Image 1 (cartoon, one colour):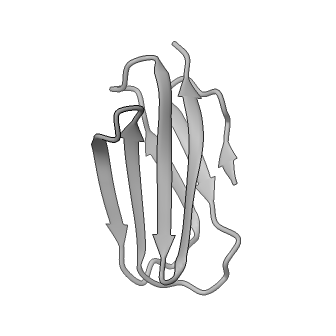
Image 2 (tube, one colour; image 1 turned 180 degrees about the horizontal axis):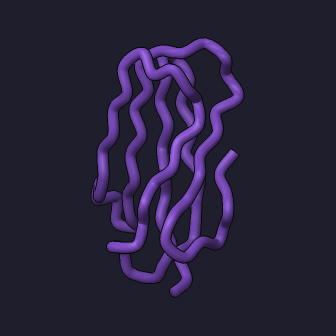
Length: 79
């Protein structure tokens, strides 16, 4: 779950999987440029908060990879 969308300066990500492990999160723009890469090893939570205040207004994507699970979600930043 990704919320709020659209957002102003931060976004919350909640993964439904209860099995904690290695998680990779990437934020990228419409051109496919990776703007942020986060990696969590054996994280004790599946809830994440990402600060986006340094990004321009526009459309972005976030990809989540955890073991064999992979998902890409679109979000919008409006200032």
